Image 1 (cartoon, rainbow, N blue to C red):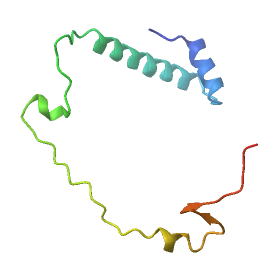
Image 2 (image 1 turned 120 degrees about the horizontal axis):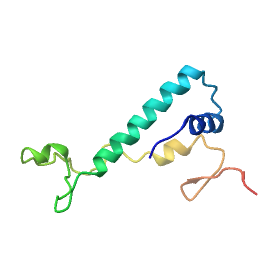
Image 3 (image 1 turned 180 degrees about the vertical axis):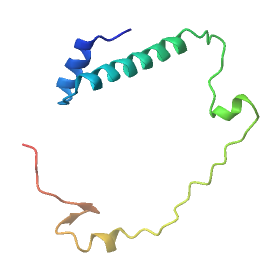
Length: 99
C-alpha cells in the first residue's frame, strides 16, 4: 500500500492540519516508509511459531514476576462519600445528562 500527495492532503484536511508543501512531502515519505515496514513484517512466514508471553522468552526461559492480588488500601468508601451531595446504596448520584 502506498499513499499519494492527494491522500496526505485529504488526511491533513480531516485532521484539521495545515501542512506546508515540504511538511507534506516529508509526511508522505514517513507514512509510506511505515507501510513498507508493515509489508516487510507481513512477508515473514510465521506458521508454526508459538506466540510469546514476553519478548525475552525467545532467548531465555523466564518466569513472570507477578505479585499476589491483594488489597493494599483499606475500604474507605463511606469516608470518601461523606462530602458527596447524594449517595444511594454506596453509589454517587449525579444529575441526568443524556436525554
